[in-house]
Image 1 (cartoon, rainbow, N blue to C red):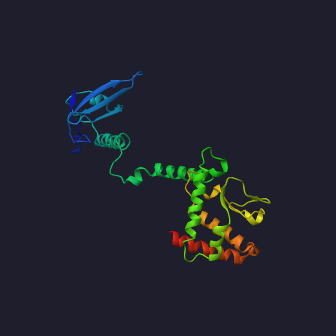
Image 2 (cartoon, rainbow, N blue to C red):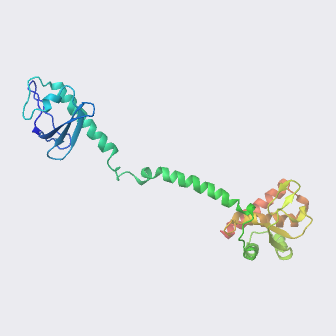
Image 3 (tube, rainbow, N blue to C red):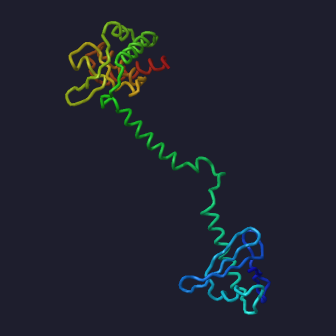
Length: 253
């Protein structure tokens, strides 16, 4: 059945909140326990409202009739309910607005990726402690020697350290460099009673690339120990190592 719903007391007409159409198809329904419901279906856009008819169920069931006792407030209340229902559907059932910035749309995924990436970076950085199955020791030894030979070309690098590069054996090791109760990566020589320099696997990333700054610092550290063993780890020794490391990295970069 079709009908127009309006108030005679005031010029208030029920209209579709989607297209403003004022003609509807009205379908009365009955529930399982005798409840009466009404579905208002817009002729123009198909938008609809489904509600339980209490006071107005008899009025809407009479086609083409605008009763005298139809209250303006009832029409306004029904109109408001329909508008709120339409807004709810648009807010929850429609697809999200694709015009949102990409950072806003994928912020949660980016955060999860950063957290996972940070965790993986930490695990992989410590991978050398887990004795990886695949490790090319010859390749790492070659890389160590390439860095050592590059130090020979650094103009500001002390000549006394260059002499040690030529005369002291330098080799890659997987041994755990333990001195007393401390793990000292790259620390060998003086503390172990050995002249040779051992470069521990911790100076490399798990996938084989050297940690450039750390590897250069380890080489300088060990070369300085063998050049000036009397310094130990006093402030003068630390100052010299920092100075020589900065000199080497500045040139190599």
